[in-house]
Amino acid sequence: MLNKKVEKVLVEQIEKEGYSSNLYLAMASWAETKGLAGIAQWLFAQAEEERMHMLKFVDYVNERGGRAIIPGFDKPPTDFESVQSVFEKVYEHEQYVSKCINDIVGVCLEEKDFTTHNWIQWFVQEQIEEEASAQTLLDKLKLAGSGSLYLFDRDIMSMRGEATATE
Ligand code: FEO
Image (cartoon, rainbow, N blue to C red; front, side, top):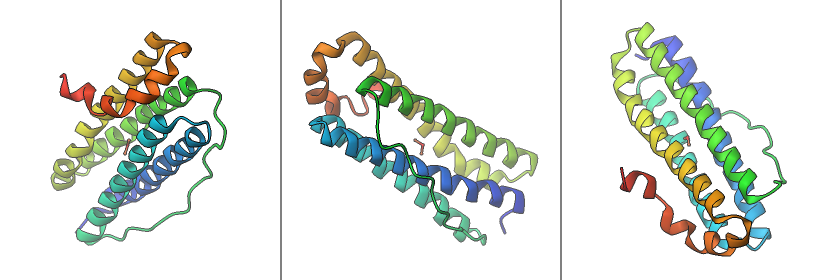
């Protein structure tokens, strides 16, 4: 049976992962309407990954005898200043999610829930990769400058997973 404090933070994380999915979906839609097809594709794929993260929390909570409550989500922003500001937001957001995952690890240890502690390690690793990939894209964008947005948009999907592949 799932420890109640652990269950509470896991259920809260369902909302955070679901909001992340909607945030990236909003960014994807913005990019698509700006004619940035590659960037949109990257963000749509990212939104899908976040939805899978949310479902992992739902599955785990229910499987362990807890109850996964599906929350409402805040409306994500609809407009973004620039591609750079989008990826700055992605990076900031992933840092925030990493902090949330680390807080869950802390609760697992406090409550001596070593089963969930073990399960959540997948997310600890995933956050390292997500932060690295956002940072890599930001670095490439800065290097490229706004004049090369066309090339960045063309090549972004091939950079997917590059941050971890080169580690
Ligand atoms: Fe599911 Fe990108 O955090």
